[in-house]
Image (cartoon, rainbow, N blue to C red):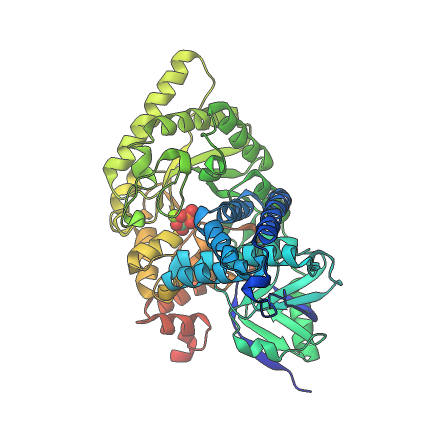
Length: 571
Ligand code: PEP
Ligand code: MG
């Protein structure tokens, strides 16, 4: 039988070959008995027991996820515990039981109401609907004593197909046994997508109802790079996928085909991420998101705790560069004990450097003390520091003044320290426009395309309704990147990129052609990007970049990137 293809959204640029295993957590309930036959006291006690048991399970899964994937992903289980104990939800279920429903029907009815409300809100709130479904299914399973399909012990080479995968489901997937997963629903920013990237699993989401036509036991190729699922693949497709799956990890520095060194570094959030950065062959850390040291706790880490974390990062990358970003909270990064203001538009409010120079100035000083001490302790490794969300030169100067005054304090206290390399992120249109004025005052720029695309296009990151607009392949975003690189030319200022765009191997040639010196990404795609660097010739990459930059629309950019429309063909 000839192979057929279903399109979706690839969330990792990885491929896997395997056999379909459908995962259908069964949430269908039989009709409830008549209200007078339901004993409310018994049902309330059953609901209470299920909640207690669910909370215990969530805590175990949280610990397992923190160990296997990382703190960032584990944090989702804290949100589940909060939902589980939410007074409005508990009251809804209790009222429904008192009105004559058995516990499972009361759970189903109450949660479905909240799921619908969150879905209607769209954007990030809409994504919380998945969390609610996850808790609902957990409670229903506990209430029905049903056996949950064990995703952690699937046969080797399984490709999991599902309507959707909740965080609890994905946390159970064992990357050594599962060849990938494909879901009917979901987008690039869904929890399942984040887990896939952390576990380096081939995954395609948002395939739509057509996925239901693929039966259990069918052979498939999950082609994350090609945004597709190939059903009953022919030998050629399978061989190509297997070759891609067998990715070659290079641990040394890489050069383009004509000998230009490009640094391929890792973005890390937790110390657990450092391990995968080393495993995937990172040349250093291009972005250490220090806010993760501040999450999931009741008070900020003190100077010594931060110092230890920075030193650990430096020790993992002996002789390489480690770029630490100062605290970047606000916007989509809440930290409960910091008492962030309630703002209409948090992405346009007090976030990043604005907080460090304002209400979080004491925290900023503590962080700088820890950073300067870590820089002083670095033996062979280079610590660099960069500031998030800079929009004005004054912010840069004020922040640098704080660095100098902290350094003076450490000097007078006789504490070993050093001034690190100093840079800024280019994440705002203001910084891109003013890049020529910033360049003489910094050692480097690091382009944060996640925020830069959001602000250039006025399209909220993570909001699926405007994801096409907020795409980093929009010509306006490419122009902002090009302007930044050009502004740095002639100054002693290297240019890196640490947004998601840097980790897309389909764009490596373009980025090298635009003149980016360092690419930093989540560890999963480091081998593919390194491979792409070695195949790039800078001279043709420059011509290619000029050709792509000349496009009028995103579609045209995409076509030119796919090389259907190369400069050679035009001549
Ligand atoms: C960015 O905005 O591109 C970036 C790397 O920072 P973050 O994703 O942490 O906001
Ligand atoms: Mg950012």
